[in-house]
Image (tube, rainbow, N blue to C red; front, side, top):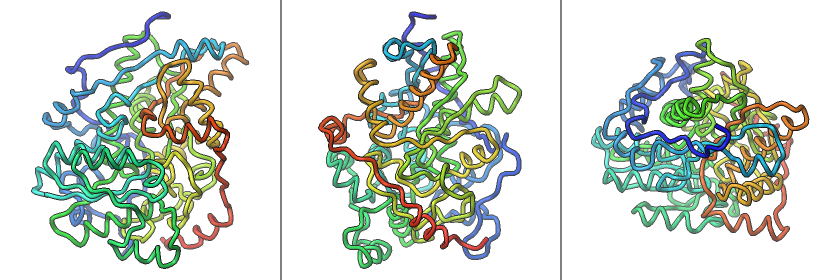
Length: 451
């Protein structure tokens, strides 16, 4: 065990069902209708998503079967590798055993195709021809663009302006797959025009971009909305990650004591951690799950657990989640996929029940961890993933201080090949930590809906 690096599974080992943690979490608060305040039904969602995704959003079934065409496409890169980080362990001088589940082997370099393929499949089955979505750093947008190409769907991506300017090659990747990429806020929607009228230099946010995409879908019967994180069905689709990891740890004759994932909207963290938490909730071995979020956008460590909109304009159902307020605009951050005002309801409930511990980390510390990982393990992590690397390193150093050899698993949700300008900023000494403004959070929280 001590010298093995990978613990490979075959295509036959790809999970046949997604795991739904909602079946094992008691007293979940339902999403609510923004007008009436009543619990929403699948019918309330049919204007922007197909029937099967609406059903998955609200189901309490523990397992949801993965359609065979989706599994066949997964097989192009899944199962993704579980890798023992021997080089990082030696660098840290720790007795900890460190593993990472690497999702950067997908065609777009992140975990996002796990749900993009599924959402495109269900929309195609429903006769939809066009999809609209938001994206932060571009990992989700490029993944939906890929899925659109595979299922012959037109895809429009509203990309947060800050990341649109920072990451031109993500734009190029989306366009190569045939999608249209638009900087958000844009002049194409009422939401975008209103934001630009107030702030012509707005850096945008995932909340704003989500509003633009939902507005487009709601006003065009041939277009549906596809979501990259936060919603229950998105986290459901990502649980192939953790299910594979459980099987791979059996090959390693090991099991994690600590599971770490970066967290912005919650899909990467939930996809990795929920299957382990499900085992724990059904009497299995307990795990310490840590959510690594940016200190400049700390929804779980500084925000409030309340009903709030998932988007800035207030088009979505009301979600009970940790939130900084749907009007909060996070400061600039290279990890654009983590610049979101709230946290997935399922992750939020797990935090509230003490099943997940959130930790906020600064941008410069994360890039230092990312460089260390690259120099010891050979993979340049995406800026989002560096948050998980930083917290995993902290846990490994704690093992060294305590003289305890715990097993640590973290999610390496994607590579940073399109983010080298961010590493350039760090290596040149020009990278700065974004300042979180509690006053802006207080103002945004004052606008929470009255539920």
